[in-house]
Image (cartoon, rainbow, N blue to C red; front, side, top):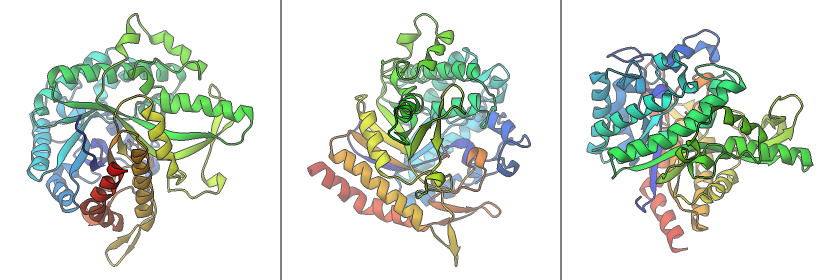
Amino acid sequence: MEDKFSWGVSTAAYQIEGAHNIHGKGASIWDVFANTPGKTHGNQHANVSCDFYHHYAQDIALMAQMNISNFRFSLSWSRIIPGGTGAVNPDGIDFYNKVIDFCLDLGIEPWVTLYHWDLPYSLELKGGWTNREIINWFTVYVQLCLKLFGDRVKHWMILNEPMVFTGAGYFMGIHAPGRKGLTSFLAAAHHAALCQAEGTRAARAIRSDATIGTTFSCSLIEPYTSSDNDQYAATKLDALANRMFVEPLVGKSYPVKDFKLLNRLENFVKDGDEAKLAANVDFIGIQNYTREKVTHSYMVPLLWAKVVKASKRSVDHTLMDWEVYPPAIHSMLHQFSSYGKPLIVTENGAAFNDIILNNAVHDHQRQQYLQMHIEQVLKAKQEGVDVRGYFVWTLLDNFEWAEGYRPRFGLVHVDFKTQKRVIKYSGHWYANFLQSHGESALQLSRTA
Ligand code: BGC
């Protein structure tokens, strides 16, 4: 993949597009989950959200105005193939063609995620990620997308954060499709791990010129105290949260040695899977927001460990109760660099209570958060970590999954009643940074 450093912003289809049931789109698991009472904060859903579907031209123009030259967005599988398999939806394809072409017209490079959590609902009715058939469903979808858009889209990500969508969606039941239990989690997890590899192979077979990666959530995990029990808890959580999906992809298999429970994945492993789990990605996307402190706990079955919330530790934290701890991203870049692949920070950002005065959004905390994290990324780069990009989560305030619209992560404020956009202080800062310091800071790191 190219050597240059890419600065950008990241988004996801379900969180911004709206237009949930028009122009031939099929329902996704998130459409169904969020429209089921009791599942999200205030029963909020993204039926409209920022209505990017109708505002894409304005929003892409806004990015150009902000000097943003790389735009990461995801494709909604059920907008392209409404039933998950079978007939395609020409209007859905037309929408993504327009988004891609308009980006390119304005000099913005599209970076496309193939799956950011919005599985077609009809596939969930057949078992969703717990059904091994998903490998075939997903492969056909990937091939189609690469054929349709691969002439213009050069950067692809196969999955967004498999740990989160399988853990929150199939173990804890707090995200779509809302299933609970170890068995559904392990099945979904193994199939997602196979799909990230099979998807990589399928994409490459269609477009050998594509740059292909996939993304992982990661947090710096540290023991709450120096007790042996807490240290053991931290090792287990690190294996589960940070290593479980990336290690099989790079040919190291699941980290069962450090978290024995993962042995039970065996129940879903078939002959030959070990080799199929590995794939040759061009880059690894890491998505870091925070550090977690972990303590041993008899209250949490299976893991026997629990995270001590930032607010309980009286440390600086965001609206999500995530500690603000910039060295975490530096540590994670070093940890993931051991896998020997170029890294891209495909998400980093923060939700705070923004102060709006005289039509201006004074989000100084977000600006500081971003600056401190970018400094840590550049520090890791200077130290020799092969990091080639940084994408802010996110462009627009949007639907924050089970948390609804309360946490705002955007560089751009959205009034969800009027759909009016206002660039926040942090957005102006990022625009200036990209125009000047972004480049010079990097030149510094190159000559160091
Ligand atoms: C996800 C985004 C999400 C963000 C903030 C990441 O886990 O990829 O969709 O909005 O974190 O929670």
